[in-house]
Structure formats: C-alpha cells, structure tokens
Length: 159
Image (cartoon, rainbow, N blue to C red; front, side):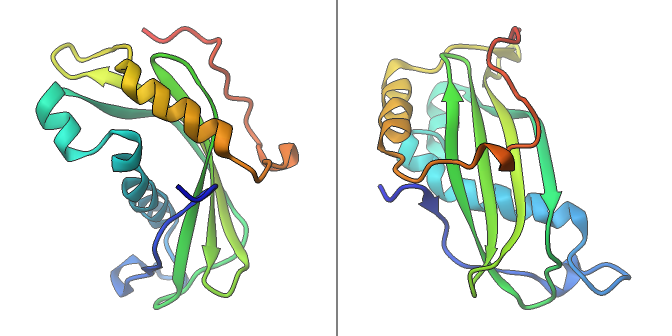
C-alpha cells in the first residue's frame, strides 16, 4: 500500500457548484469521503464488512480548512494519514489536491468503530487493528504538525 494513501482522480461535478461559482463547502466533505472509501477495503472496512459483521464506522468529528477554490470540472485526489488509533477509534488527517499538485483543502477527523445493533462504539476486530498498525508504521511522509488545526485526542472517552 502506497503511503500516504492517494485516491484516484475525482471530478468536481456541475451540481456541486454554488452561486459564487466555486465548489460548495459541503462537497469538499464528499470528496474527502469518496477518497477514503477507496482505502477502506484495504484496511478491512467497507460494504462487505458492514454486511458480514453489522459494524461500521461513524465520523464523530471532521474539521475542514478550505485553502483554495475548486471549480467545475477540476480533477482532484485525496490523501489519507493515520495519525493515531486505539481499539475503538482513529484520528486521521487528509489533504485534497488539484491534479496539478496544489493543495485545495485539509481535513482532520475522528472516526468511531460502531456496532450498529446498539448502535454503540465497539472494539475493532484484531485483524483490522493489525492492518491499521501496519498502515501507521508504513507511513513514510510525516505530517506537518502545523497543518493539524484541531487537537483531536484519543484520550477522550468513546462511549
């Protein structure tokens, strides 16, 4: 797995453009989400995981910094860095780049592993924790601490 993960190119759709002529803020989240959806099966998450286990992930916090406007037809990709994780949650940092290499937005998130029968936060299977540990250990590009705006912490209690 390439580190950090880099999604395939995604295209800004016409219906995502707001009355100011640029990508509406909500769709930056869509692009970040679609990017991580490509990574999830490599870690062990995704549609098959939900169907077979009844567990999934819920985003508890997601903070976006909008750095440069995107417009209709722009092609972008998302990266994903695993900052930290424990048995029930993970802290991530992502960047959204224009295909020409300039940074359009950053995002920092806290994601919970959830047993949907409750729903309640629940431990991830050991196999997924092992894949996450391997992913984190393989990250060769350090995250610039100045880019992480929020101080998301795994020490806060997950229910």
